[in-house]
Figure 1 (cartoon, rainbow, N blue to C red):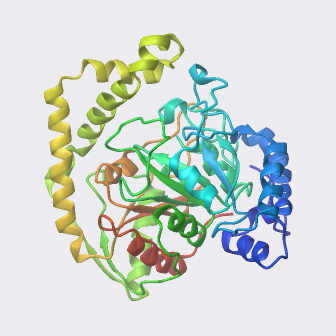
Figure 2: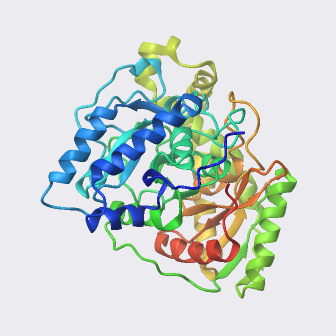
Length: 434
């Protein structure tokens, strides 16, 4: 296990609102914020290996430029980690692959540009699994370096959990935001599919890929989400929401820690005044796991056509097998998967209308031991397939004292409702981190 955290919270580990408040009223310079991030990264990076690209001089140059800027955006001075599948004009974008070693895009991804335009400080590129897929990078878990941090947004989760930065970009095709958020004990947010522009993202599966955020707390995540979605940030809470307890068809694969987390959350929320009723999904949803594999394989094979044609030998065996399966897949089979998923989306939209949020399992249990696998994606990918916005909250602990999150889901395009209801849930249940 890692050493206990210091009783003095470094600037880099403060909530976003506090950093922005202190910078805004002149108590802190952006350079001071940057130096705190650099100190924390240099102290923890040797064991965690969360960063694929980190240049302290570049960070300080950005910070000094922000301190001199006349116009101050809503995120002025806020440090942000950038998952290394998003383009950055001033940093390498290698996507966890030797094929792109040293690759430097000419422009930023749209999401990165949006945050820069609001004054955010881009710290560096966080480690991703190869092409945001199944082959992990070197990142370890801040709670126990012998365990996976989850993936594919592994570096982002570890960096936030270790206090290197308050928030970082992630992407989710299966479970790449919520799984690492759960394993590392932080908040994960996957927006409604298509809400955040994917321009400048290396696509994996085009009908599933979603850019989201991993952060220290809900308010931090919502501040950044508001900048991305061009809406006003809010501290709104939905007290005593209508909660649908949805165990999903995968419930029998949950470990006791997750069963306890979901059942305990449901009981305590009901005791606090929420209306909690069980939502049993029709049998139609049992086909989603098979459909997800088909869509992922088929679309990945096409998104990686150039890399396969020119650099197949540099693609990991795990990912190469997925590409081969996708190449061999018949179009009719892909259509079955796409139509099955579309039918379930339409059905969910009708079923969820009676609730503010759904409560569901997020991960099978605690982070597994070992770094060669990032964990089971099924509880997260189930909802990713359905395009609804979702939040993972680290509300419980497993038998080894490690975080186990619950997952909350809101109706399509009702991301603001997701934040408001999740805030009440978090306040009611508390957080089970260090």
